[in-house]
Image 1 (cartoon, helix red, strand yellow):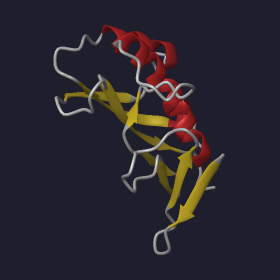
Image 2 (cartoon, rainbow, N blue to C red; image 1 turned 135 degrees about the horizontal axis):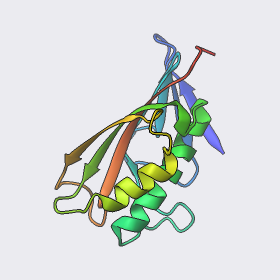
Image 3 (tube, rainbow, N blue to C red; image 1 turned 45 degrees about the vertical axis):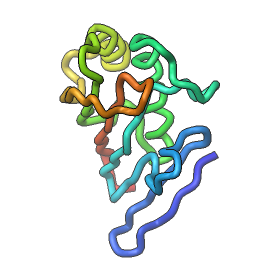
Image 4 (cartoon, one colour; image 1 turned 90 degrees about the vertical axis):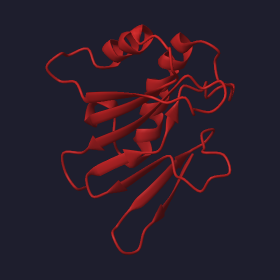
Amino acid sequence: MTSMTKGESVGRMSYEIDGYSHGNNPIPAVARIANTIMTGGISGIDLASGKMPSTIEEQCDNLFEVAARVLEPAGATLSDVLKVTVFLKPDVDRTPLNKAWLKHFPDEHSRPVRHVVVNPYLAPGMLIQCEIVAVLETNS
């Protein structure tokens, strides 16, 4: 189940998904204004168990599955993604990220741009996190 709230002045809609939150912080999973969608931080948590896997491979596999679930209530899919900013803990190998990237964005002529930032301040156990910008074809 999802929930949403509407911002009065700009037509902003905020969305949540069951089993995924930013803890006690008042931050939605995703927000939308017109045809532009932006996420908060998306982790590689296992939504079924609610636990963070211990390996970068598992977190990368989960990252895009969680992203797809987060985008859905705002009307977007991974095919609508324009940019992904990825945050990695220092010394984390990018090979698992690239493998998951190619799995979810296989067409070399239709991939979002990506920027990777090394971030030593990710939550304990979190090796990777991302933020996404997606754009829908219409304002509907």
